[in-house]
Image (cartoon, rainbow, N blue to C red; front, side, top):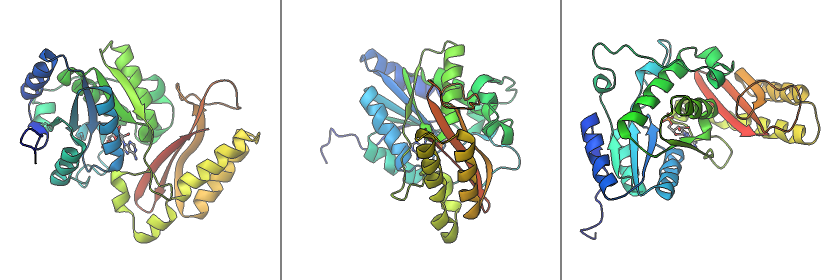
Length: 287
Ligand code: AMP
């Protein structure tokens, strides 16, 4: 290996370390992009890092499984933690710094401030089933933005409501950062890559691509002039026939996430969340 080549990303576990490194880059005139993750990295996360490297000279990837965005009945303790593999993937992807704070660093004793987003965070989609989720996301993401001082943050469209919420939070709080969305990376059969796919049994994995296929079929029908309600009802039936128990499958305004009755001028997004066995999958596509 060329001795000047980077061996792997630097690690920072404290806000002071993170800020110190970013300050050094700033003195060199570099732009800084942040990719927030919860680890268990896959090709979808790598695509975010690659986008970040196209937008900025330096890239920080945060790995923090944020307890505040999990409800007590959710999978916080069993959420996959694969730090060594994550570091290997980020070395290959050429990330510059991995920020991996301990929970006590993010939420020290006495921590008492939470951001309560509304608008897209109260659209009646994920928030209906995970009522405390976006407060946890908004709070940790605002902290990551402020801690890193990054110019740009990259989020996946995979978590589409989250992308709209985070965009709104940055705008509403005048955080000096540009939030960019990156398209969802999928398996060849259409299943969106997710750290939670590893929970699927082989039978569930075989059925899982129906989620994307049913949405594509419905979106094509709507574009062909079929009423939204009818197309969505058909998609519901199709995923239920393959064993999914849907939480929601809806067509919404692509930015505000407000309900829409019919196709108009504004871009639309179809969003779904459904359980397959004990695993809850989410996905979305443009209409
Ligand atoms: P997570 O670690 O699951 O919280 O995700 C971290 C970031 O990766 C979020 O911005 C996600 O939207 C994004 N992400 C997750 N899965 C994918 C995917 N299949 N394609 C693109 N981005 C993704």
